[in-house]
Image (cartoon, rainbow, N blue to C red; front, side, top):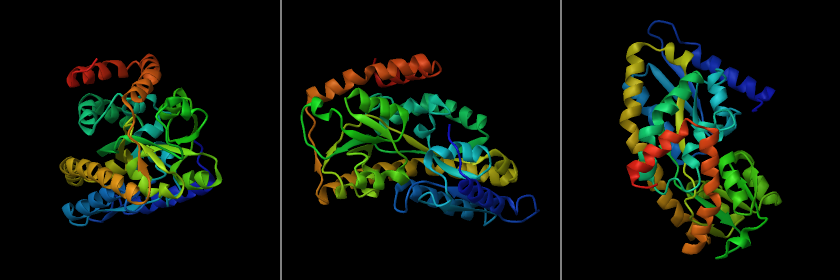
Amino acid sequence: MVTLNRRTVLAGAAAFATSTALIGRAGAATSIDLSTAWPEGNPHTENAKAFAAKIAEATNGEVNITVHSGGSLGFKGPEHLRAVRDGLVPMADVLATQQVGDVPFLGIENLPFLLSSADDLRALHKYARPKFEEIAAEYNQKILYMAPWSGQAIYLKVETDKLEDFAGIKIRTADKNTLDLVNSLGMSGVLIPWGELAQALATGRVDGVSTSVISGVDGKFWEFLDYIYPTDHTWASQMVTINLDTWNGLGADAQSTIEQVGKDMEAGFWANSIGKAEASKKILVENGMTMVDIPADMMAEMQERTAPIREEFVERVPDAGPIIDAYLKDVGRK
């Protein structure tokens, strides 16, 4: 269970009060704050800012969204779904997989080795997106757009071609599915929010990280770690949501415009995220990190060891079973 501290509640309440102060006055502009945990320069922050700029333009200044990056409003990533639900902040860029403590289904994207590419993620979304929309509504919010991360990598201080050499390494994960995954590989997973990761690496609380190559650049991992294992073991998406009370306070024309902008810009947001991933790989290597060529037998062993996680997930989250089956049939896999 996520607990919001007093500073967080006050910060969110103040932001919400600011965003809603002008709602309901005929012809008045509406200002809305959007919270994201990601720093400036991150593609998801860039996407949110581009979305905000287009909304201001398309509504002729009637709706103005201010993006607050780096968790500056006081909310950590795992708190965003609840914070928007409760009106502590009117909009947020929510990492779906970090919300599995509240909604286990949202872990469907990052089941071990279920996806191997952005094309696979698109195929999964054909079947899973309606369920994502339903969950958002249950949590008093609406999804305006979604955009992906790249596949995840494992960052370590050691180079090896044998899975047994991973044994006991303390590694940061962002969600329960990935925690279970790294534990099944013999590592010791530790759940740590992004904002606490640099300190954890600097103090030796963890000796490795499971995250995207984009985040590897954001965190300047070359200052702490040496090797990148491009496993693509899980994928994930951000979903930008708006509190339904805030949404319902907007006029029908503004709602229609915002919905259309989200639909029109989503493909570009995907392209930005995916393109940034390829650029990030180059940056990591240029700063001295080594991209490990993972042997086929090592990858096969990873997949074999983690297979029970998907089976357990489907048993625990039965709504996911038909969606996964439809996706696998779509991509020609079992």
